[in-house]
Length: 443
Image (tube, rainbow, N blue to C red; front, side, top):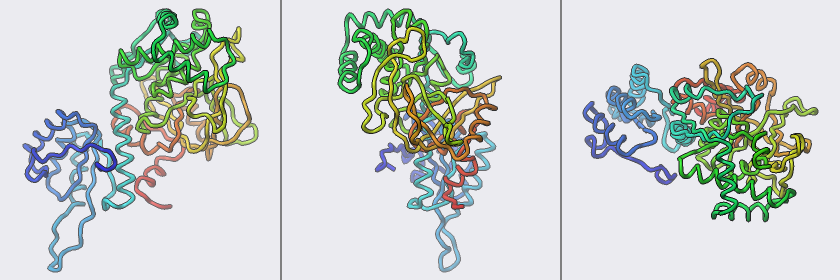
């Protein structure tokens, strides 16, 4: 595990031979794990009889908990057995449930077995999702667009139930800060302006581009100074009246800096993006998209699109892309981006709620070729789009989703166990298919 880059905190100084045996061992272990601020707890079983101490550690630490035990050896020649690991696993799982302690389980196996490697990696990613989710702090720039009732969220409920903090920023104040940035550009401004002019076809006025870059630099500065890990911004129409730009390019650049920016002040969209990003250990940039139209020539293909916030790093190979003007909004304001992003395996994610019920939608698809369009986009292909559509329509969801490259349904299945009050809601693969994959069951 250390070879894989995980830092381990053992209990050698908390229990005899580093084995959790008693309630007093549990008390010392809980204190050490809390002092070290561990992200998760791994409980490999060697025998039976320590289920109460194990469960107390799970509850006391309050972090994602992984239960596993190695396969027992065959009985000795005289018929005696050295260990009863599986017996201990059955006992501990029951007591964890008695304590209402959520846990993850890897099927009884050897450390060199695929099921162990798969399960451990999946658990680690899930633990990272939980870690990020418990520290969400979203900067809300401006109010929602008046007609967008879809992005209404319950700020108090998000804080009370999940600890999600929303920090409001007046759009006028942000514009003032961006204007000041124009007068006194910092290193972030200069670096970003240089990157855009060298790596994209810029089809807007230089002054407009500098305004967009200034907005990006301001958001980056605020994030650093105030511990913001995502934003939700009012893209239109006030920003155009105040500053003459759209923020699409700025948002795109922020996504590549691993600070997601949700369009149209979509708070739950920003949460969705953070979940998606965390599931990849923050390695893969997220793209924030509208579910727009079904492919006229393929019943199972859907267009993921938005005016321009998809990360530039995801551009399709050989595509430089451009920064231009919106083709629909009044006055055709500058700031949109135009490129198709690379295909391959993608996960589509949406955290949302209505009437106090919160769900986490996830579906896995393939990014494929499709008709060219304006803005930033990707066509995806599902096995059965009608199943997705029904679930999205009947659930507490809207047209906004967070997309990320990789197949992450199993990660979010495990993560949702540790986010009390969130219903895991998979489309494809199904819940049974996810469980079969984790257990390496072939069907």
